[in-house]
Image (cartoon, rainbow, N blue to C red; front, side, top):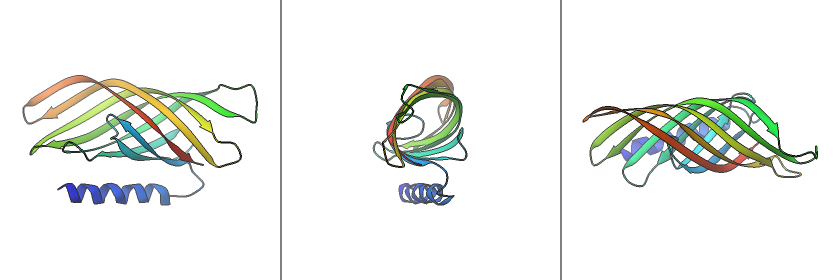
Length: 156
């Protein structure tokens, strides 16, 4: 099962990158509903898809669709590409540990900072997300509060 999910995850990341180089895409390291290692693809300036995997304790795969509601420049210098952003999204995923499966669905608010590296098409970013989570497991259903953080590299 781990091999199948890993292959599906790798295929999805490659598909993200191949949709069209005109859009922004990237990779991240983090913790939360999107997984520890993942990729994201911007469908346009404000709408993005994320998909991640956590291959360590058991296996978790998760993703989200996020809408960026606003961006604010953090620099008075037009040459410096430093901005904060905020938005909302919906994440979902599955965790398997010791033959036990858990499915979750999470609405979240998010905020982050993106810094465009000078004279390149690269940017680094950091992001935090918070929101209520519906958890469905073999032992029952519950509501929890979820969070995530990401740091990564974007290709514009």
